[in-house]
Image (cartoon, rainbow, N blue to C red; front, side, top):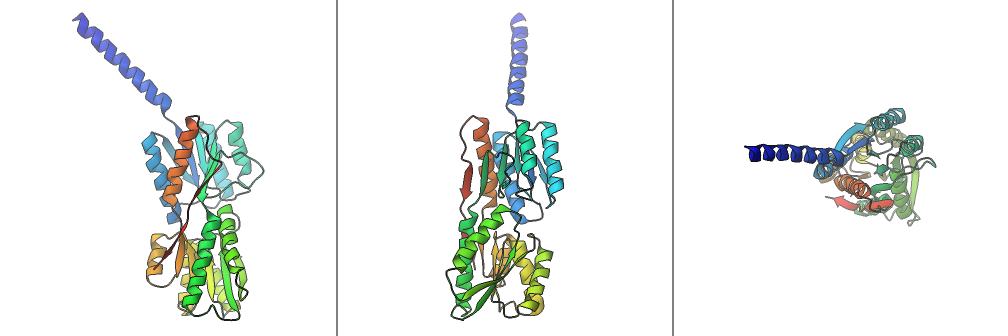
Length: 305
């Protein structure tokens, strides 16, 4: 009986020790996405969750919804909760700096995904994102291919517009890459570069205005698929969907369908799930005392019919 009692005591103690070890090793990560409206960020969130589950990390996932004050409040809440790390996809690359600095002061490591911190405030351990300059070049080459297919590239005056979102770094980079390709052609002019803030309704309104002001427009680059699909809606409404080359960015399922139907010529295709997985991998390395690259790029490729 004594042996049985001692064995039971040992089992109980061992269970308590193992439970304590699990509790000690578990980590909580606060996440503030740009939005959950875009398929891109839903895919990124899926990548975060799958890899976090692998490591046994708990995620608290929120969305800034394009509102800097809301996102700043979310980061403040993470700091109050004492999370072990923060992932943020800034709604404003410069405005987010003070919130990141507050996390730094609290000793909480911050990682950015997709969109970088451009502020001179705040330190980020690592930024994980598509190589958006390279992706912008991919979008530019797709525009050239689309113009060639529509027998427009030999025209003396080709007019191209950009539907932009200049408040975030990832878009600034992709527009830079796109313009690099356009600049190689003397007969191509970027006649408009207008923000729609990555939102479809805004992009549709911008495109409708462009068609009034620039009736001979040859091509439009939407900096994400909501921008491109908003442009498509305006072009369809005007009955000229086959006359303008539309290029998008992300290759979401809805955009792929539009590409299959010939409404969008092609997309620069990101890998948001990989971005999410890679971000958690970087955090895991940091937790384990390993060095992490300050910038981890994820390649972008073309997607066409």
